[in-house]
Amino acid sequence: MLPALPDLIKQLIAAPSVSSTKPELDTSNEAVIHLLADWFKTLDFKVELQTVSLGKKNLIATIGTGSGGLVLSGHTDTVPYDLERWTCDPFKITEQDHKFYGLGTCDMKSFFAFAIEAIKTFNSQDFKRPLIILATADEETTMSGAKALLNYPLSKPRHAIIGEPTNLKPIRMHKGILMEKIHIQGLAGHSSNPDLGHNAIEGMVDVLATLSHWRNELQQKHQNPAFAVPHPTLNFGHIHGGDNPNRICGACELHIDLRPLPGMSLDNLRETLSLKLQAVAKDSPFSITQSALFDGIPAVETDANKDIVKAAEQLTGATAEAVAFGTEAPYLKQMGMDTIVLGPGSIDQAHQPDEFIRLDQFNPTVHLLQQMIHRYCVQAHD
Image 1 (cartoon, rainbow, N blue to C red):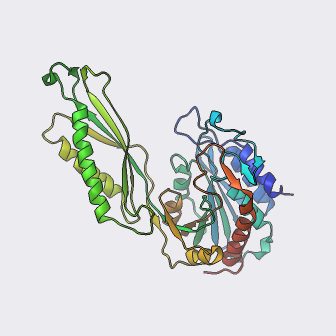
Image 2: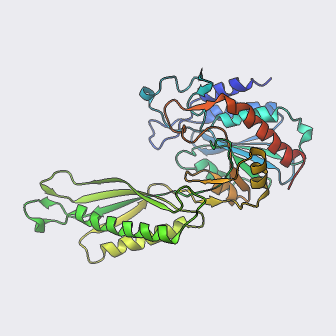
Image 3: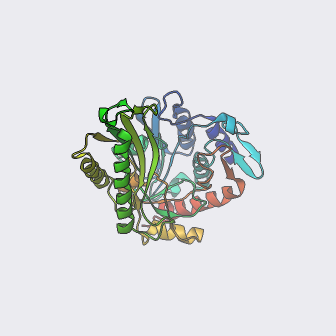
């Protein structure tokens, strides 16, 4: 017998699966994966585990045969947490004010519990097209789980829902993420004589001016009114240079965050950035290098006329929207799936102390997933 819905959520939250670029904070997701594997086997799913890296696994659970059907996808990891800022235990569900509090309740372990609760209402012989559950590793850091799935032989599913928190409103496009490090190497010296060195901070002033001008160019050239911020953004998020006011700064480093719109290529943006930095470095005494802080996440768009978009709009009563945060949708789309993002909870609670999901979203989420499963796997809608 499978646990009741609240107990499914409680067990998922109780299994730590923090994903972090800091090794001392990073944990395995295998406890969550094995919980899900046992539960989906109980539901007569064929369950396969894919090793992503040491201690990190993906789960692929399938019921039904053939092509088409529906994918319900989510990530099993959470962000790190600051225990001092939590008023409750992050790994123990606290029910209060008609909410479940816990790390991963909103982003996004609970989605798997809702999927299981929806699937319980079907029999294995009901499925004329396959229903596939994807549970991935390290979405919060490297997207390595989603990238590993690109090499996995799925049965050509056509429709996909990623259960990230959207307050049960369908999302059909989101911006990409590009994070780059720019390092300027100058020459340190005594501040009493500027001729003794090359001040890297002054070189960074030129870089900032160039990037500010490029940002204006990008915003004038690229517009999409579907987004709350209808143009790409370029944020100067971190800068550090020098070590003392009486020394000429020998090195300065800048970290930037660029959020491109759908249709803008990450590779092209990196190449353009490189050319602009080369232009700044030309005829200057500085060495300027550029490197990626991580691989980046492409922007994504699913056509408004795709069946999965129309069905989600009809069932939720909400027009599909666009968001600025990134998801695994680009990788599922690369695998040939028409993909939307649709799940309970609000992105405002994600990555926050005292993360929560409202209890009044439990039944609507389960009902919505039942309808989607029935449409694409039982009725075999194309």
